[in-house]
Structure formats: C-alpha cells, structure tokens
Length: 102
Image (cartoon, rainbow, N blue to C red; front, top):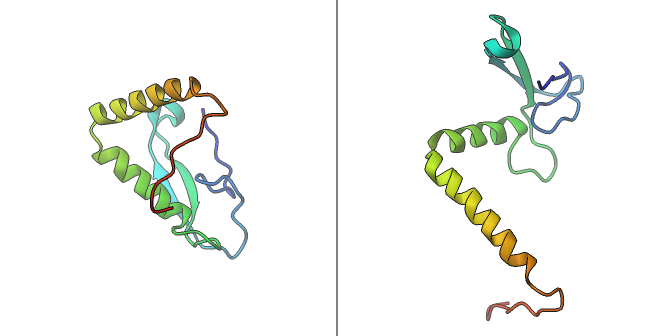
C-alpha cells in the first residue's frame, strides 16, 4: 500500500510548500480505502528547467497508459529486456560507431 503525505507531491515526492499552487486528484480504490476516497496532490507549477509541472507529467503518463494497447506495452518491455541482454555481452573496451553528423 502506498501512503501519500498531505503536504507531499505524489509525482516527485517533494514537499508542497505554503503558497505553491497544487492540484488534488480524488481516487476511489475500495481495496485500499473501502468506500472512502483518497487524495493525491501534485505541483501545478513548473520548477526551473522543467518542461511540464508534476500534474501535467502525471496526466501525460495516464493518457499514454490509457491509449497504448497492452500488447504493445508488453512488446516494448520485451524489447528492452532483449536489448539489455545483448548489451551485457559487449566488451567495455569496444568502440561504438559514431554518426557522420556528430
């Protein structure tokens, strides 16, 4: 079971300070909370150097998970695992080819 602190961002796990804008997401999970909802809070503003707020990143991840077929998600994980197995056999001294534009 994952427990979220009321003053903590559920995405980046850092604290939400007084005066910062945040978003609250209401979740129903009978297995965890019975009939009562739980709440997760996310930063609504960008941090320096970020392209999206924690809330926007969370929403993007949710949308990708919702729209990606399960068969493709499994295939992607399988390809990553195969790649990891191939990479383990490469010598640390091997020279990787460089692209012509670099």
